[in-house]
Length: 455
View 1 (cartoon, helix red, strand yellow):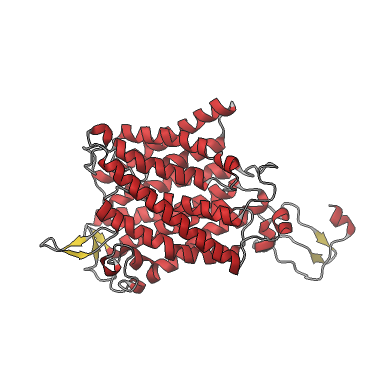
View 2 (view 1 turned 135 degrees about the horizontal axis):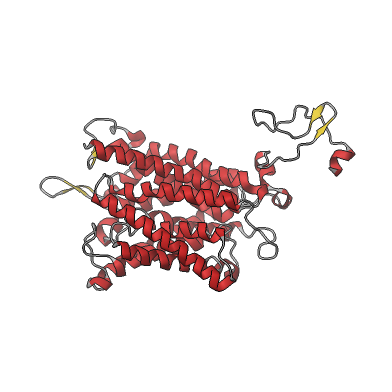
């Protein structure tokens, strides 16, 4: 084990963990004020649910040896409850096995949380919780096994642990999760949006972000955490981490400019929401390619992603699906851009040592990238569609129409994100906050007077 590598992986895991609260701020600022707490809580719930599942069987399904050597899913019993991984002899490369477990846990968490943006303002919180359990088990853990689990061999070269089929048979490149996380979550978001249905007033009344400073703060935290996401995937403090770090800077910077340029040409003005969205588009696109392209290649990927994602977010109005916060337009499209452009821009002198079409490599790698990307897209969409339809039949997805109109925060959580005008009547408090932040009324029987109703 190497102490420097271990320190970097643990710090990177903490950075990636911060991305989920950052996503909560990013998403929370984009919804209307009456939905902000519900939107943020969906991300925080993913932290709780997936953190538990990962320890119990998620890590084993992802990185255990393939069941029957089929390369579809890892053995869920191999590391059940992370059994045997506390030993000093349990290592992953040059770091302790549990450092690797921690790093991959936060990837699983944010992959699930990303989907929530597609169904903002209208979904039952309880149904969302059940969905996170089922989707992670049937979709994320198997797909992550396909992409992230590599074969392990002994000193004689014989395979001792069989990994996933995309990583080992197809050999598509996905450094940090363009397919396993972004295409996966984006395809799931599309399926879920179709099943849950449109918000009341979609495409007929304005549904503007209620807090753009919150959106930009969330985007900044995502960019900060993404250095752990990409550079941390080197699993060491080394040249590979440095290449990924630089590529993450330049691709994101170019994507901001690409998004703002398209806004200026199309709408007449660049926006803060566009800049924040460009940040995420660039980060998504460079994620699979961070180890395989040069900084100039990263610039191209970022620029293309910024323009493509800015154009794609309007598709929901053309095709009539309500992807509330553009998970499809940013994560699915951005993931496809980054994954497929590896086939053109992979640099033979990069750490991946693969040549794309523009560097004399022919169409071979492009074909591998396409197989990996579209296999994940189709699998995630179909299985998510089935999960969503089952939950719709058993639990229902939609809150009542009145609750959606009045605000899902009050209906699902009995809270308000901005309780600016608390009402008091006689000796009873109707709905105000105590110094500790409680919104519980001191008297359940207290009723508003006529003057309070007018107020």
